[in-house]
Length: 207
Image (cartoon, rainbow, N blue to C red):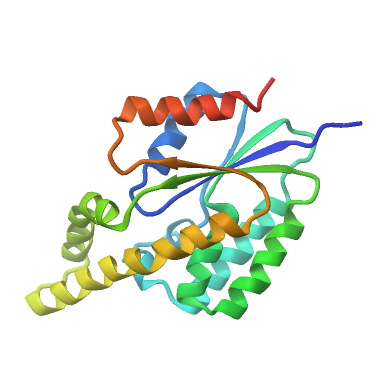
């Protein structure tokens, strides 16, 4: 019987280290197919203030495009890595509704037919994410041309609030998926320890 392709789903909150670890995995496993995250930047191909300012319409475009990517994965491949994937449902609850999140969650599940999905979730606490991300948000606000100090403060509060709202939903969907899954904590680890843990976890599932 043919073996199903393994789809590693790398997910986690903002500044959890997922994008950086993916760059290292591309070098470590050059024969894998890597599928970039579907987000407001990749979808709209223009400047955007970030996740905290995504609209319902944009979020729905994102999730539809992302599910299509999963459906179109070549089932003859051996190893694939995707960023966030089904864990986009956490964003759906914030920017759309619980009902929409449930609906698209089931669509994601259907899209994974013929694949062996393995979720690797990078657990990073909200305050850690915020401390790592705050400077990036400040720069983003400045680049957007916002001058008024009260407006800057309001926008920063929105970014921070978004991180805090999303965290319990990340955990919710980690427990909800029935895929094989692992939680890798990364709030205070050194890079070397974190990288080794991720790579070792992947190596246990490849030939």
